[in-house]
Length: 116
Image (cartoon, rainbow, N blue to C red; front, side, top):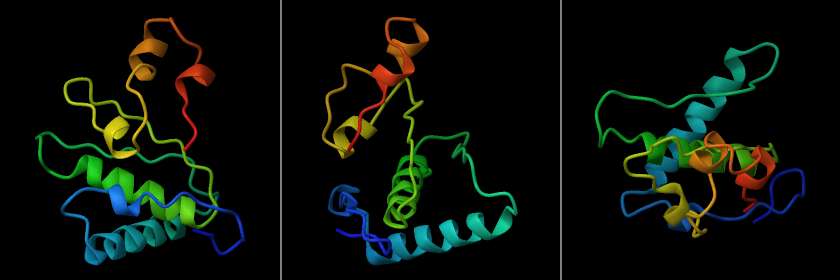
């Protein structure tokens, strides 16, 4: 898939889960627009959090990351769910490296980041 600036952006929208519909992607696009318009100095980081499981943190963060990447933005998506991490399965990468490896000083942050 190509972004509006001509860069090739991986299309992960087909792997966003069973509940991913055009309405969800449209909602992510609306959220992206609201976030980008809400900051005069540019958007640097976003945290998606909630108190309970099953409230859509992973779906929201993945969809938001995809629509930001579709604009040609550089996106770093960090799976901080230590109980049930899911980003590795959504993006079809190995679960061997990541946040825990970095926090336990086994890896530098550059080694924990996987490009997709």
